Image (cartoon, rainbow, N blue to C red; front, side, top):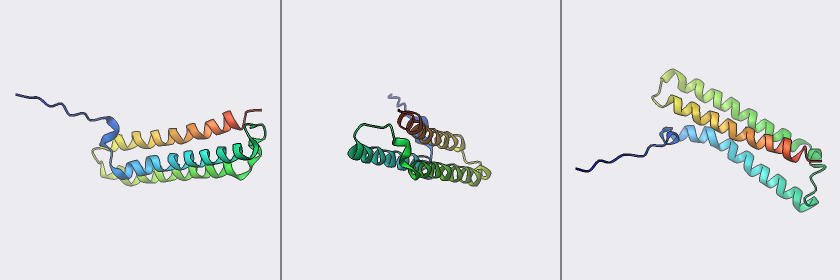
Amino acid sequence: MQTHHAFHPELRHATVPTYVVSYLFPVLIVIYEIYRVGYWISQFGMNFAEFNQTGYEYVLMLAVFAVQVVVGVLFIAIVLPTRHPDLEHRLTNIALGLFCSAVVLGYDYFALQGAL
């Protein structure tokens, strides 16, 4: 007799809307950060001394993060009353998505804008 052990990673159990809510915003922020840094390098080279002078671009990224927080809270508020069996996985994914966005914003603020 053959026993089969199914591999079920923790993040696999969440539903597709959870992945969209959790990881769409961090992907957008990363893509914008890559574009922003690439454009800066093409214009000014590797001189990031005045990178904090870019103006509205970092505020735009903060606004996207704020929308991510609001959408995540609304998503959990809608799902919470249903007591869906994978509620804890949804919370984990949304927290991980917020963490990923915060890491990108922190990298931009501390590593690039703080580089003098």
